[in-house]
Length: 219
Image (cartoon, rainbow, N blue to C red; front, top):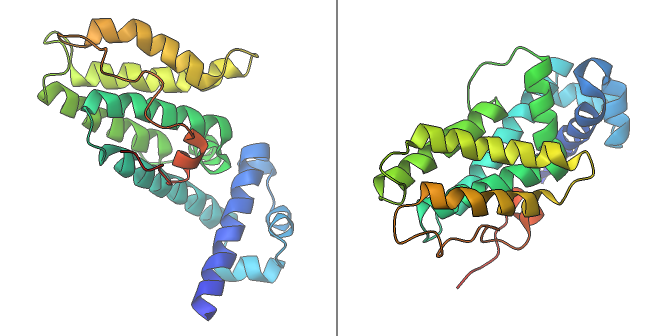
């Protein structure tokens, strides 16, 4: 019971820190602000985290862990690898739009010196998964012979990032924008008989839930 309570406290502090880092950045976030947002004492925060640096590192690691968990669930589906790649773009777009943890991790990786380690760097984490899945699509013959897994992974990751960036100027929902882009791209990527069997909007109806590592059950 005590261990469970400690884990809940640590999680609450981590999420409060993520919201603060996402909103204010690393330099402007204070430990007092984090403890107050989590409704915890400064002593409780100090017990679990020795410094703001340690707290920032935990946020980045937790974001990468959550991403790996969500992507593993998507990759476990019985579907073409290219469909999984489409799903991954929707997942990342959702994380960048609505997930404080993911957004904070990206911001921290840019503000602080962060190694290219996929366990602590969200950009490296996403790129690793995109490259692996694109490689699977290349191996199963889904991609046209003239395309490469590296290029497809780079384009897919760019689509996901741009879908969120474009949303800030009042543009369409990021998932609608992604679907429109995939509609155009698939005919240049997919080998015959064509991309009709792929879902450009992704195979999930609630991407916010997916980003929290909970997938809907499918037939």
